[in-house]
Length: 282
Image (cartoon, rainbow, N blue to C red; front, side, top):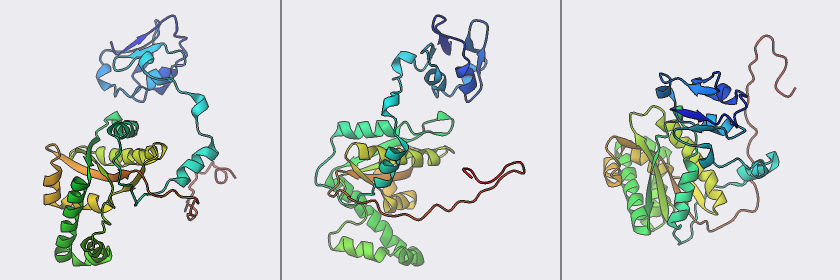
């Protein structure tokens, strides 16, 4: 049975019926249920368990007792959310200190709550740690840049990669910035939802890192190289059929920022139906 109801707790409010994204929870005389023929359609998103105010519903994949209650007192105010989001910075200077494995696991568990199409959760993670391993990856990306200089010189010049390689020759890593860890998101290449899921999960990772006193930065050069450069792909040794979908440098930051830099105002276009009046908030 896909869902079970505690009849002593269930008030038949219908919240689980209304909130099921697949619309397979039905209200019956005994209470909410899912027909046996509809059960394979379930994506195990947990909405039915999460929305029940009485903890009266258990799902085959999770029970109400195993799902922590939402602490309303911990919710951000709009002002706190604005401060948190605006104060986050991409970090390009890292301490010579590894992040404890349990902290990285905690970070990736938080990233796993990112939404994904059909709750498929396709993203997997490769954590590369230690100066020698991260330097090896940086060196392979530099090799890709040298290949690009010959194969696609216009792109090489457009991206000013001569400056990056010049810095590398002087012992300065502008590719992975001397980060102690590189976290790579990967997934099956044939998954249509994986690219968006990976970007969203990496965004969760970047935001969650701040709460753990960690710094992150999107590894753009690495991601571009990993998409096309065979030597780097071979060095990553991902599972068969998997491809990289993004990566982030992670470590303890050297500096802390004291000001929130300005950003341009959002560029917004409004479109309304004939019955609508004015822009939202007008």
